[in-house]
Length: 101
Image 1: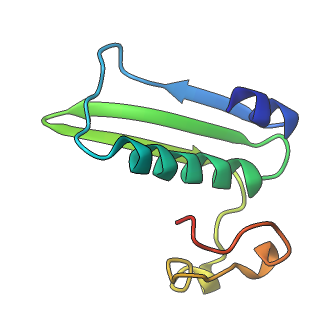
Image 2 (image 1 turned 30 degrees about the vertical axis):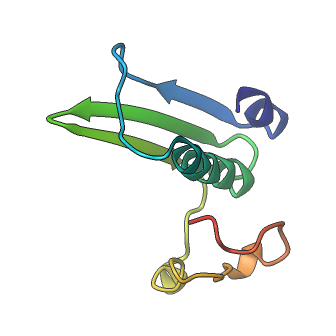
C-alpha cells in the first residue's frame, strides 16, 4: 500500500514484530479484512494524514491495528456506523457500498 499512500499524500507507518505472528484462519478472508481496513483509512483521511499499521503478539494473541489521524466518525453517527450498508453522510458520494467494516 505504500504507492497508494504516497499517491494520496499520506504517510504510511508500519510496525511488525521481528518474529512471525501466526494466525489461524482462512488466508483470503484475513487478507480481505486487512485490505478493507487499510483502504478505508487511505480513502477517508485527508492528504497529509498518517496511517499506522501495527501488528503485536503475545500471550497467544495477535493484534492488528490500523489507525489514522483523520477526522474520525462524528459522535452523532457512531452508533449507526457498524450497521450493514450504513454510509456516513460525508461518504455518500465516495465509491463503495458501506460493507467494509
